[in-house]
View 1 (tube, helix red, strand yellow):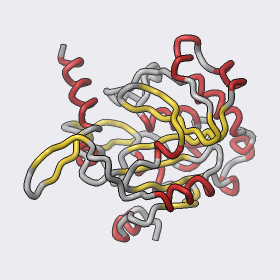
View 2 (spheres, rainbow, N blue to C red):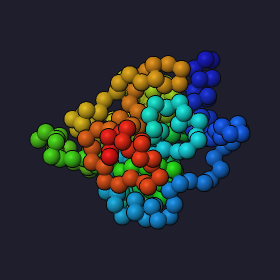
View 3 (tube, helix red, strand yellow):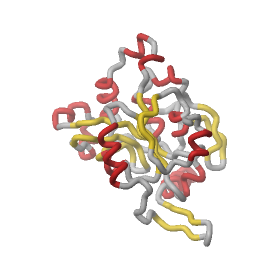
View 4 (cartoon, one colour):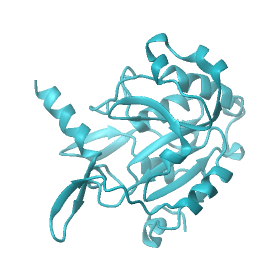
Length: 234
């Protein structure tokens, strides 16, 4: 019973915005700092295998998730009908085709959507592998391997407990970590102790991807300079 209450509580956090002055709480008003011109930049710059990390202004979960950014996804690029063979039968209803697709995990579980939908946020950064710092073994891990594993996770339930030791359920960072597990630890990216909600848990925050040696190939203009300095980007 307590687990169901906790899961339900976490689920609604991602849909709530908080405005302190005057204090009121609303669901998403549909206004984001990333506009059409930056969306076009993302469409031009992003490459298959890139990790997309985003954040919002005034969303309640942004106050509770450790760090500046609050969500992460994996850019798949083009997905066509032939790729259905990598999807589990029970998740086939979630399969989508498109030229620029992203896979990520939210309260409803692991799903796919167009990169333009993913860009509906206030802050975003594109991260990319840097072969120069990877071992020879890691460099042999191709995007196609990551792609196929990601589609296999389609329909996986969301992990409201953020338990990295159990991949039967996946949060957004767990999904990215699991798909990229054969090379991602070489960037120093691994679960660590963070303050989350009312507890200290061993998790992976979206900021952990950003502060790593992954290449920062694009970032939205609205990210505050003090935040960039804090994350070691400036």
